[in-house]
Length: 255
Image (cartoon, rainbow, N blue to C red; front, side, top):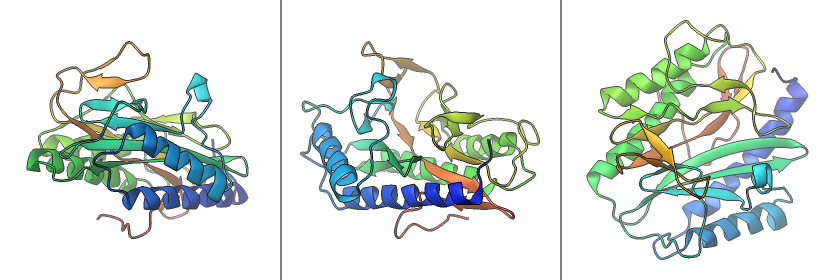
């Protein structure tokens, strides 16, 4: 469950490359693009420019380089040539990248064009909630501390946190132990130790936390049809705190 320093260095290199992928997506004018176009761009970048592998492609039979989850889609949205991003949408792109045998995992919810204030507030709160969880990571803290910090921030802002999906350990495999719940009680659960590497990836809903999976077996949506937003980073527990392995250019830790 813990990684050696040389393994964390390799995970950090994968994270650095993955951050570059998001840097390219940041430059796109998403309105009018299909989610498949974004997928294909990300895959070309990962494979041909970064000489890495899109780790999601082929995992559990999944056929694409990323998940594209738009508006009321909570997670695991499947890219499509028919799904055209429109002004006012919010869309999460969840991308994994493997380099030198080690995988990094990150996601970001984008605002497409002019987005109404309620949706912008949701997206901002989801981003802040992720950082509340990250700030709770240190040796001796517990996973309950992390989950509690996330859910408390979401609830204080009038939102709910999805409970069916969680963060996870990561390394040579995309999904390793431990499971990282985005809700919990302080001072409960696994005690964090230096060298642990896992994702923190809360899904924050505008309405109730209940979700359902659509008939394609992948796409998870809010049951009440309201919006959902998500952000994700891969983090490592250090001797005195936390290191964000997928930190993007220009991104600063929120305090």
